[in-house]
Length: 230
Image (tube, rainbow, N blue to C red):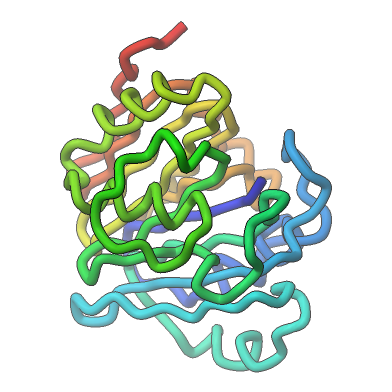
């Protein structure tokens, strides 16, 4: 449905994470290599990063490959914490900037790669859009990111067809779940990348098993099986 990426580590330019890699989000917007559902991600995109503790975003309902303005400024934007995504809209869902990840509560940036029946989501918090990902993000923000694992297990139990890959960061922590879709990790010397699929052919990429919680801090990376793991 979508492709997303997160970075936590030493400051890097947004362009070096999203636009420059040979198989980065820019390429994944029209030619993803591991996407199981859908052929491309042309229904919007978003890039979020932390600037002195403040979450900032640039979102669009247009394809990433067509935004020359972003391409011109992305090399000048630098951060130690980035969350970005390209979107393939679920049939029937609106295509609008507010429907593109990352979503935010002012403290966290969050992306959802997947699909979920909105009918199973409790009406909690204020969603930025009516799309399923925005409603799910509002629920996660309301419950708190420390409860992310429990929230995903609960929602997955209510909707057996849901795909619930979440990626969230707050400037000092990065959290992710795998539930029905792919996630890979790269650990260079200066930080950690989590991505729906590798953005290059570096042999250091590793695949995260399905139904796991990933927690990244300055101290390292912790993987925890989610309830219901198989």
